[in-house]
Image (cartoon, rainbow, N blue to C red; front, top):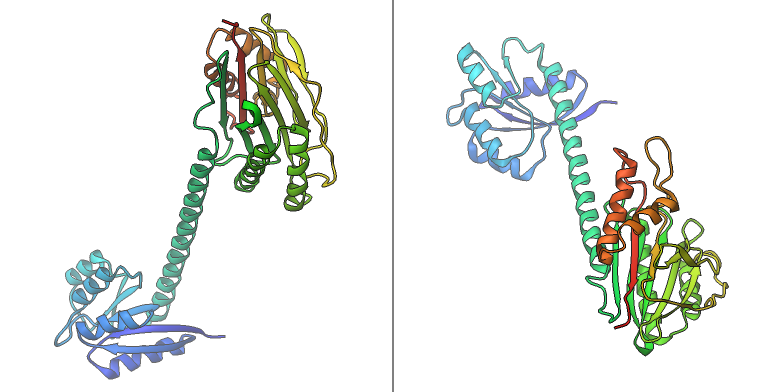
Length: 384
């Protein structure tokens, strides 16, 4: 099957234009051609049509190939430009090739016409394909940049001020966008919900599900102070949206600053750690039910409340830090988490979280961060 070829011919001789079209036709192309011989006609043809190649005589009564090439370059249209002349001298041929013409052929020796057109049209199409791929990549990167910007705005700008406590949260995604989530949610009775969550996977899809989870929790927490009830309702809605491929592990801990108690429910998330003043794990905020989104009818209930003591440190994390592997496949692990936190207990909570993440990145060496890193640290200060 012959290929369609749209040819713009800059030529004052109708006969010569027909010869060029006929040669291309005999070379296997179905040719659609238009002949122009002035700048105005060429400009109109470039505006009104789409061309695969331009064949231009060097000298015309009111126009010439250098002017035609300059006109084409001003439009920024990428169309192969081949000069065909009866003889102009080597210096002029070299000059127009340096100006951007793809090839130069003599009218008396057109055996190279079909191969030259075939080559230039193929390369032009490859350039167009490459540009389209680059434009698509740029558009995708821009969408991811916007998504990351939006996601970062969903995280708390700053922790709430809680007399008697030092509170901080930090999330650093493995990709441009992450599936981890942390939040500080105002709840009834002047209490605060501390939330860490992890959507399976990381990237744009989990980031969207994280944003959805955040929205549900914030709405539900305005209406209820029962952490189990909040997760039960959130799970029922999420189960309809996530399908079988995704789920959300999440720990919701309600802090009452006056009584220094934490009431929590844990939907399949790694345990929160309550460290005493000697850095010993005094208790864990362990799993109490399945992750959100696994089964719509799952009922969540609050665990036995934890009473915080002066100098306690409550640590809520996703699994990214603890499960980081070194280049020798050595797990960062809980012991290193406790070592870092113990060594930095005198630091503010925000510094402790940052240094913990830095230690995990140091552990993996030159490897890419394998998963999102997210940590909430609550330091209980001495009663004053």
